[in-house]
Amino acid sequence: MSPGMGYTPAELFAGTERRGGFRLRWATPAWLAVVGALLLSLVGIASISLTRPELAARQGAFLAVGIAAASITTFFSPRSLRISCWVVLAISLALLVFVLLPFVPRSIVTPRNGARAWINLGAADFQPSELAKIAFILCTAQWIAMRGSPRTLRALVVPVGLCVTLVGLIVLEPDLGSALLFLPTIVAMLVAAGTRKRFVIAALLAAAIAAPVAYFAVLKPYQRARIDAIAAQIKGDTRYERDIGFQGWRAMRLVGAGGLLGNDEEHARALVRFNALPEEHNDMVFAVVACRFGVVGGMIVLLASASVAIGALLTAWYARDGFSKLVAVGVGALLFAQMTVNIGMTIGLLPITGVTLPFVSYGGSSLVACWTLVGLLVGIGIRPPTGAEKCSFDG
Image (tube, rainbow, N blue to C red; front, side, top):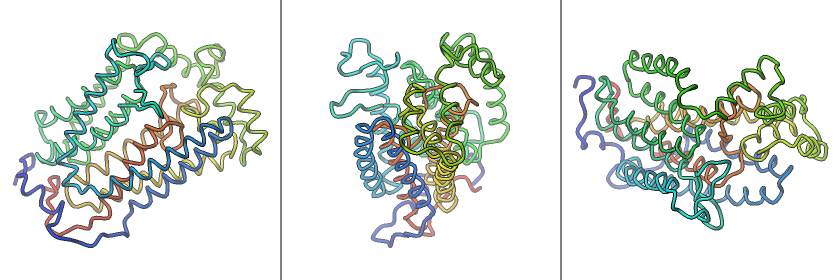
């Protein structure tokens, strides 16, 4: 069958679920992601407890829910995920529209920092964009797997259109940071699916050309100010230190205060408190990690994050059906991109965009969603190849 031609559903589903029973393959690289995620979660709770002990207890409860969600997710075979993913997408789209409706009471959708991105569930808040990330990975993988390698522009219409739709709704909240994470995810998935390199290169060039236009025509004044602040910060210009660049400067100072081995708990708590770092338990939690545990603690976070990404890529390598390969690649790309952006903005290399550090930052929606993604990896990894799989990207 020539590249670009689709496989029949019977061919694609072959091997994704065997009739009768089979023995699970417990020796899977997906456990690398589990170990990395657990280590990051524990570091996060320890760091949050430094300044927000009451939130650390809640984060511990969220961790238990996240691990439970991951455990349940492992029971879903690739076949069942492919059948249900569009339902998850429909729910995600409905919730993303719901938070934007102006007549929804503030008691249900409470704006934070000007963004309508959370739904109040009473005991906790729910962020629909986190569910949208999972739905996007599953549906993109399903669509591409059903049609083979997207070797024509026409074949890219649905995956790109889905990405643009979700990104557009999230930008309207506005939550530019979460929206930007969809871009490296879809690029990684398309490359893994065998998309022609000239399409990928053309898209990256178009994005590079459009960036200056977006700076003036799309970004809000405060968003442009953040870019100006990071540019000045890199140059050593301190003129934004007391206004739009305050958070970035304070974060870098806390990172530097950690030194090689960090500070004792009391000293670190005092440094964080007197530096008055905004969102120290959330977006800027890596600064607290570095202040408390030093360069060693920062390296542990990086190594644990790398463990998650490597576990995802190895899981994709050993998967035999195209859908499972793309899901694993999408999970690894999303989590690695989110980690890179968060740490980059904390150490002064990227503008502050409100992106959380996976598994470490405070937040129930983010933590449960991240653990659900890990559950997807384990569910793929523990199911051994049956010998009948069809990978739609091999030919």
